[in-house]
Image (cartoon, rainbow, N blue to C red; front, side):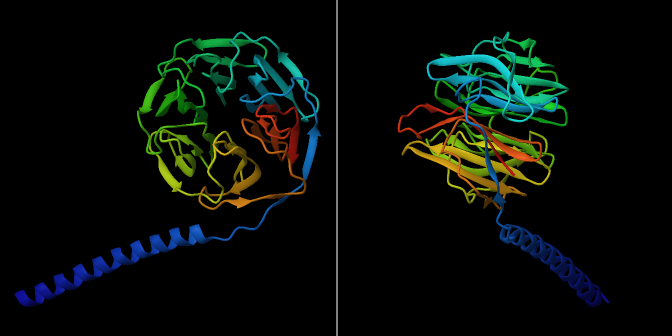
Length: 336
């Protein structure tokens, strides 16, 4: 009788183990299938919407879609830093909401939209900042805090998920950061993680897509240019989508998203003066395909990109078009 019981128990264990192995095999198979999923080549029509903008050539600015308009906020040009805010509904005609905002001049700051307001954090001129400002109309800017709990920084990312704002990474005095901070009101900031799994980095790109925050590429503490892709469903837990995306490693690129996927544009690997003018698209952060534009836009970095009016937009930045290190672009491009 005992032998029969042992045999039955042994058979049950083997069955359970078999199920576990089969489920694990299915999970691995699904993951492999996802990574091997072929994507159709995207073809885009390029349009030079504006050769020159009234706010002039600039880089290290931020751009947002807010109140059914595209916005350009602050940044720097050749020998000048700005504290202005401009908007447009067509990319050609730009209006200054303010040419002298309450916040100080800055570049390499970060911005997001949350709770019916535009927000900016940090940036630098001679030193890094950790102030937080918001506006409901782009004209009047209000100080949330002049000394946030996170340390002064520039080259960081900012995103809004489920009504909460996140400040991600960046650097201060050349030291890269890997922390993530969260706030619901822009005044009180809490540490989500002191060192996220993606490590210390700056000049990365951040967007929100598929109810997740995404961090792509950048420049790390070991002076490496990166092409990895990370995501988080809550800003606290981070997972890697791919350690080596199809596009070349880079920093100071731009990332935006629509409901169908994420768009990555340009950037630099400036240790060898390599500037990009490519466009990449992904629906899952793992598979990236290069979109073929009907006409190439000039290579650039420190630009901004938006998805607005069913088009991908690339705004300003700088590159090597004229053979100088600082060639600030005044142009605006759209792709559809």
